Image 1 (cartoon, rainbow, N blue to C red):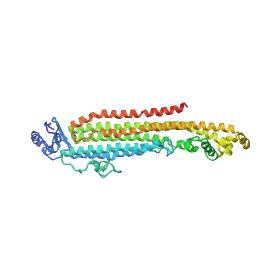
Image 2 (image 1 turned 30 degrees about the vertical axis):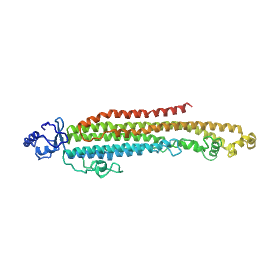
Image 3 (image 1 turned 60 degrees about the horizontal axis):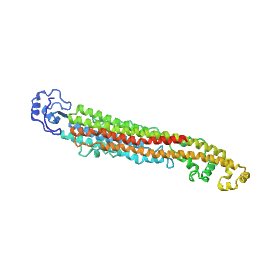
Image 4 (image 1 turned 90 degrees about the horizontal axis):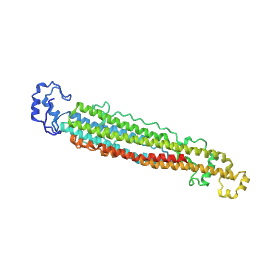
Length: 469
C-alpha cells in the first residue's frame, strides 16, 4: 500500500484528497495485494474510505472497525469470565478458614480474618480488575466507532457483561471457546487443593476419659491451672486446627496467580491477532504497549507477587503451628500418662476441697491408703507441665497477631489495580505518558510486601523462644 502522509488526527475519518486521488487512480489494481480485511470485489477507493486513516506524523493506519469493536468486547468478557473465576477461586480456596479450627482454637482469630475482612479485600481487588478491563474495552469500542459503523449496545461493558453477577452473562458467550468470536477468553485450570481432615488433636495418643478425665478436671479446677477452665478446655480445644488445610490456602494462591498469568498471556495472544490482521498503526501499537504494561507486567504481576507472599505466609503458619503443637502434644501426653497412674489412687479425694486435704494431711492419707506428700509432688509435676503447654499456646497467640498484618497485605492487589490509569482514548501520546508510571507502582507493592514480610521473622522468633525453654 502506498504510504500517505498528512496531519489529520488518528480519530478523524476524513482523508487527504491527494491520497484519495492516488488510490482512485489505482482502481485497475484491485487484484493487487490488499489487507485481508478488504472485501473482494470492492474498489480501492471504497475500501480505503473505511480502512485507511492517517496518524500524526503521517504513518498509515489500517483497520477493521467491527473486529476492533469485537476485541473491545472481548476485554470485557475476559474480566466478566476469567478474572471473575480467579476471584472466586482465590476467595473460596485461598482464603478458606477450614484449617483454623472453631471458636475455641488458638488459630480461630486468624481464620476469621482470612475468611472475613481479608477475603473482602481480595474481592475488592479483583472486582476492580474486572471494571478496569471493561473500561479499557469501552475505550477500544469507542475508537472502533470513530473508524466506522459497528454493531452492539451503547451500554457500557460493565453493565453489558454483568461483572458483578454470579454466572457468565449471554453477552460474554461469544468469547468462550467455540463461541464465534476470533478472540476467546483464557482457558483456566484452577484445581482446588487437597485439604487433609486431620486435626492437631488427632495426634494425641492415650485416652482422656472416665476416671482419668475426672482427675485432670479436678486438678485443673482445684488448682486453677488455667483460670478455672477444664482440662479439655485448657489443653485440647485450643489445639483444634488443621495445618494441612492451612497450607492448602497457599497452594490455591499459587494456582490463582498462575490463572492471572494465563489471562495476561491470552490477552497478549489476542492483541497479536488484532495487530496482525485487523489494526495496524500508532494507536494499535499504543494499545498493545498499554495492555502489556498494565496487565502482563501489572495486574498479573501483582497477583503473582501477592499470591507468592500469601503462600509463604500460610506455609509458615502451617509449619510453625505444627512444630509448636508437637511440643504441646508431647507435654500433654506426659500429663495424660501421669494422670493414668495417679487417677486410681487419687479418686478417693477427688471432689474434696484441697484445703481440707491439706488440713487433714497424713491422717487422711493413712485412712484411705494414699501417700499425700507423693501425690502433691506428682500433681505439681502435672501443673508444671501444663504451664509449659500454656507457654506454647501464648507463642501461638503471638504468631496469630503477627500474621494478621501479614495477611492484610492482600490489600496491595486492590491498591495496584486502582493505580492503573483509565484511558480516555486509544491515543499514542496519552498512553506513552501513562506507561511510564509502572516501575513506581511496582516498587510501592514490593515495599509494602517487604514491610509486611517482617511478620515472618516475628513468627520464627516466637517459635525459637519456645524451643529454647
